[in-house]
Length: 196
Image (cartoon, rainbow, N blue to C red; front, side):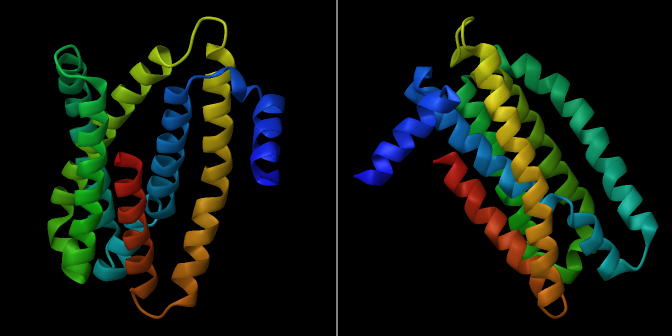
């Protein structure tokens, strides 16, 4: 009971009590997405380098990722006028999950399949971010939009500061690629939770 009272007071102080339940669900989904993507996204390149000892592989991975993201963003914007935001965001989270599952399944052999990982994560990012932008407009009003988007930004910034530190601690404390496998697995679980 005291925790509920505290949560209500904290929401009132932060101005969150004026937002709808849909906005609160968006905030939870977005927090999980940011946590998942920053927990392990930063370390995909180090994982690829550790297994290939080649900066060229890492460069090619990012070249593929950025190219796929540019192309898919255009397609997703066109698609967004025909498909519901909920479907877009879930498809994006599903593709992110698939990209990390690919890393988990292939492990050291992921170096040979980096275009697949880049393709899945890039299209997933395009789907998620386009739907997120639409959710931000739909679940806020003119009166509270700045506060809502600001809250989402502050929350994301805090998570972006903490998640890579946590990942680095996990990776350095476990031998071999076990740390990478652990953070990729945690990301998969968090993406699944965000999509439900």
